[in-house]
Length: 106
Image (tube, rainbow, N blue to C red; front, top):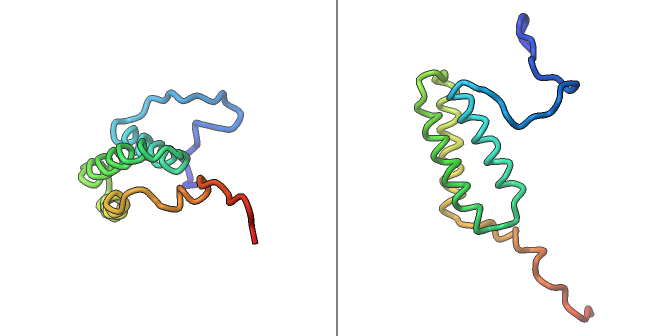
């Protein structure tokens, strides 16, 4: 942690899902929440629209003037990664455990 910067949110404070953030930080927080949702959801029908929203948010962040050039370049790399994920469709390993086990094993 940088000297002179104190965290306003601690483990002892009441947990809340409502925050007042500057616009660019709200987009970043929303993008991280979407990424978490994608990682946690098993519903493939929901993943596509969520991935599309992540990509849209990353495009917005990559061009945002309040962010450093280094951060925008990093976000641009993330956007390309998420676009590749989107083009390849759902992860086939997500179905791996959904098939019924065979009745008889040799």
